Length: 239
View: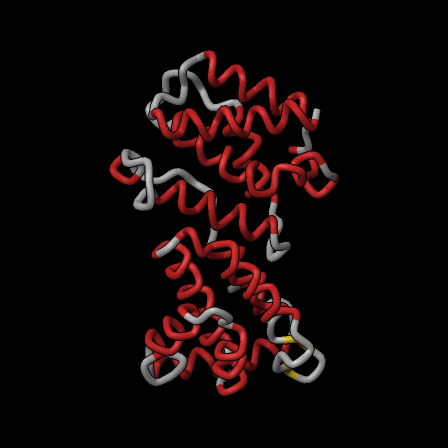
């Protein structure tokens, strides 16, 4: 929120208006949840989402867009790729509503960055390896956002880099390594570019770190072992 407020007085005034709207209602629209869920359930969500945001080009609408996008991916992770692609097309559309010289959808990136990520949660939230695992879902969302160039933050690259060196024997090491593998499988090439900054790594280094985690037995769940092996093989091949 602070990033958006500091980006200009014009947006500041719009933000205050949005805050006022929020006092009057907790939703950007009447029955907001239904509208966004309906949009994200369609084959191509962009037309309906564009219609909604043209109707109410406010910070609160952007907030709700990101919240319900996140919920849609978590509800059905298999649709994550198509939903992230739709969000990119929505943001970059020449038909997007604007505030004078400021493109409304430039603020989607800021809201997404605020929404995700990058800490491991309480032990009660990382025990199950599947669609209910909060950290793995965040890893999926982060990888999709990187792949589709929606956001790229140091926190994301730090999560990848630090988890490659997850301490052996820790109760959280397995979920850290698997979360990193999910991101690497979606956008592994980015960790090798200047965009990763100080977390930039050569593919052979990534492969060696993954191999060390496998040899140490960090990943024990049989399904996630396969994810680690595929990720390791990929980085060995491109190295």
